[in-house]
Length: 184
Image (tube, rainbow, N blue to C red; front, top):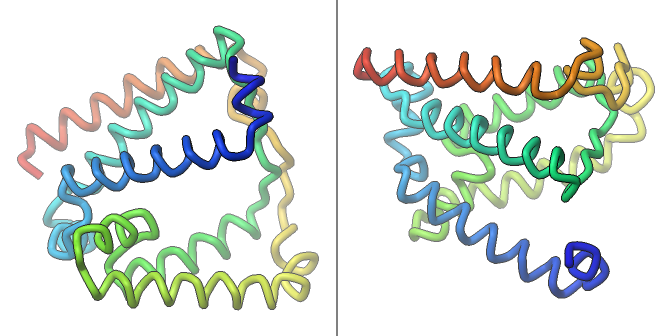
């Protein structure tokens, strides 16, 4: 069945659209499309965004590795480097701090009618275009600094994926409980 879906472009687009709409719906219901919630996170006063992101990370990590263990999906990690991570983090962080939204929350905020997020998405698109323009000049001297290839933590540690997934899920869950108990 999954092979059939993979071979049909329109099915993939439809699934992508439905998943995106659901993602935006859950972001909105989680409260992370509200500018004040995001500002509270940036000021370390409201940890709603961290709670939503950690919950999603735990669920996604367990779900992806379960599907992988069942043989239903394969992982295709992209090669990484410290240069890409630093540049990407700086661009994302600057945009997040200036706009008050990340790309996902901006799209969700547009869906609920926030016009400031619409302006922000315009900035995201301009930023993506600028990055594409300057990519050839950045690629070799900066972006490939500290290349570490398409490796995952279990591969790096030479252990079964579940030996990393389960402890990380437990640690993140405990951290979530501590944040909740602290009333943050």
